[in-house]
Image (tube, rainbow, N blue to C red; front, top):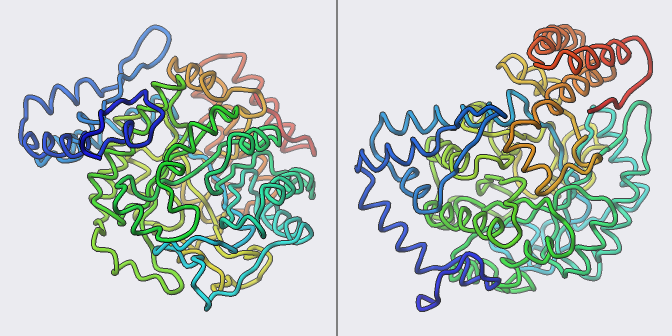
Length: 484
C-alpha cells in the first residue's frame, strides 16, 4: 500500500486516500507544530476575506490543516478558534439548522465491532418499521416541529433492500399532519451501486450521508471483519458512485475514537479534496461523531478516545480547511460539548433525537434498540430556546433543496456570500412557524424578540419587507412554507 502514488483525482480509494501521504503529512505536522512563522502564514491564508461581492475563503490543503490541528502554541490555538467562528459567521451567519434522525431498521449483516447492530449481537431485539409505523413516527416528529429528517438503517439486503428505503422516503414525504410536513429527507444507509443512488436521487432525497468510520485501511478491515462493509475500497469510493448517480450533495464523516484522530482528520480532508478535484464540489456536510456507549459496546475498548478540547479543535480545523461545508454535531454529545462546538464552526445539530427503532412514538425513551447512548436528551423546545439564549437562530429551512440550490449551485452562492440573502430570512420564517405551531409560551416570547432583532440585519430592503410580511401572515393565519 505504501508504494501507491497519491493522486487526489484518482478514482481508486488507496490513491486518493494514500496511507503513505497521510503518514508523511503527520510527520510534517509533528516537525512543524512549533513553527510559528509557518503557522501564521497558514492562518493568514485561512482568514475569511471581505470582497465587493461578499466573503471569500481559500481553505487549507490536508498538510496545512494537519499542521493547524497539531499546533502546540497556545496563542495560535486560540486564533484557530477565532478564525473558525469568523468563517462560520461569514458564510452561515448565526443560523443553526435543526434535524432529527429516524431509525427505520436495525437488521444488519455486518460485523462492525463498534456498533450494537452487528450481526452477532443476539441481545438486541431486531425491529423493522412497517409503513404504518413510519407514518406514526413521522407524525410524532412533526408534532415536535421537525421539518428535516435523516433516515438510518442497518445493511441487510433481505430486510432493508433499496426498495424498502425508497418506500419509506415516499411515505415520509406523503404525511401531512396538522401544520407538519417533512420537507427534506437525508439518507444515511450503506454504500450501494450507482444505479441505486440514481433511484434515491429520483425519490427526492436531500443529502446522502455515509461515515467512513476510519480511513486507516488496516484498522478498517479489522473493525469490519465480516459482511459487505468489510470491502474498504467499495465503501470509500461510495461518494464517487453517488455523485455519478446524480446526488450532488453528499455528507462525509469519521467515527472519532476508532483510530488516531490525526490520521482520521487528514484522511477526511483528503476525501474532501478528492471530491472537489473529481466532481468540482466538495462535501455538502461533514459530521464529527465520537464512539459512544451502546448495548454490548464499551468505548473504553477502543484506545483512541479524544478529550473534549481535542474534539473541539478538530471541528475548528475542519472549518478552516473546508470553509464552505455544513458541519454537524449530534446528540451523541452533551449540551456543554455542543455549546463549545457551536463556536468552533458547527452549523447543524440534531434535536430531541432518539436512536432506537420506533422511538418517537413511545412516551418514555426506549433503550433496547438504541444504536448509541444519547447524551443530550433535552426536548426540541429546550434546544430551540437554548440556541436563541446563546445568540443563534434555530433554522428549519429546507428551501435550497426544493429550489435546486444544491451541489455546485449551492457552493457558488455560498462562496459569493449571496446565500445569506436567502438563508437568513428563510431561517426567520421557519422559526416563526415553529413558534406559532409548537413552542412553549416562553420560547415563543423569546423567539419573536429574536426575529424582530434579526429582521433588521437583512441588508436588502425589499427582502426584509417581504420576510416581515410573511412572518405577520404566519402569526395571523394558517399560511405556511414561505421561502426565498
